[in-house]
Length: 256
Ligand code: NAD
Image 1: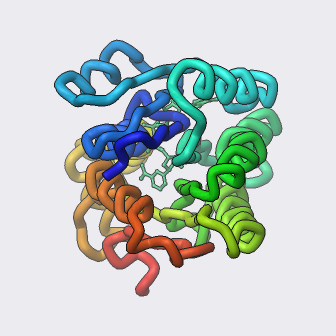
Image 2: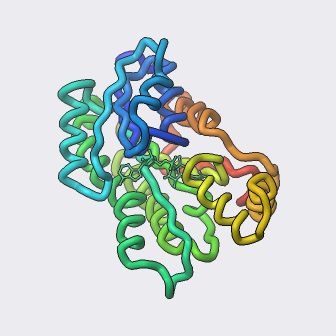
């Protein structure tokens, strides 16, 4: 279905980004990976797929490195047809204790990087009159939790940015949408599981159960593969007129 298309997935050396990249590659897209994790291990996940896989180590806090990554993609793999803004970090602290440099890093990686990739990808998408921009926001793009001020601000910002992108491209073959997962068991959440286990003096399984019980009525983690399948659907012709949506995949978190 995606033969001839090129996808860039930021922050795709682990977790949700890797899961989405794998589904897109399995359906024929060439993929540019990015992120700070184990690149060889990430690449190994694509063995057997008939798809070119590139990698660029751009730091999403650095606009000039993002520009280098976009140029690398176009030169070495293909012009970006599918842009998945997925790189993200979390920091948990009350506002009055929140380190200023952490606030700046969360906003830069989770929000500003999506502006930089989109502004650089859009001219080519417009020239070809086809494109997909998928912003990986969060349930925290739609509702808040205590002690996650920067994350909640960045993800609400990303949902708003998605709507503006959708309006500016509404009469074209380019669509922009946000995916809003609840809990997904990735390295980002594993840290929170460990923090919860330490705080409650319990084991990791019980800490996972308590995290889910707080927010996610299904008591199941969403998987990166499920989010990859949703991304694939949003790349299909059936989704040509889904524009500016924020789709929650959250086990009922937002239904409460
Ligand atoms: P993860 O930690 O497994 O993946 C994050 C990726 O971003 C990694 O590849 C990491 O190397 C990369 N990254 C971090 N800082 C970077 C930087 N400065 N430059 C480039 N890459 C950088 O976490 P994940 O859970 O897979 O998170 C992926 C996205 O999904 C994030 O935007 C996160 O906010 C969002 N999300 C996660 C959950 C969840 O429950 N895990 C829920 C909702 C939304």
